[in-house]
Length: 92
Image (cartoon, rainbow, N blue to C red; front, side, top):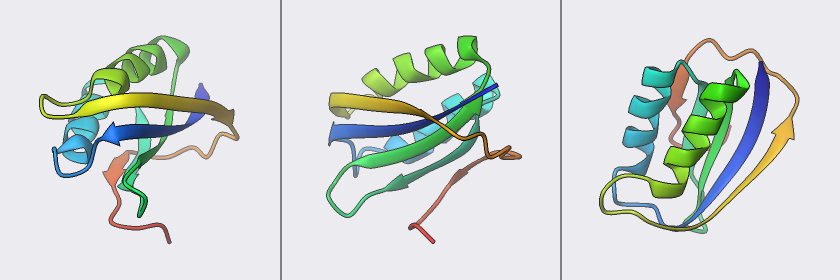
């Protein structure tokens, strides 16, 4: 099990990126959350086995149909043992 902090840049807000991310995460068994950043980026924290995280990251580089992803940055972080995957409105 691994934890990734992921920042997705490009045209990723207003294109159902968060909703699509949750659907893909649920399919792959990835846990964590996704939220829109004020600067237009999408921020994701994801936890799963390497294989599923690789597939998830691959999807993040594509995104939903109307998205135009320019950059995906990911860094390994401390495991937080999320129970599910959620769309979050704003950072708490």
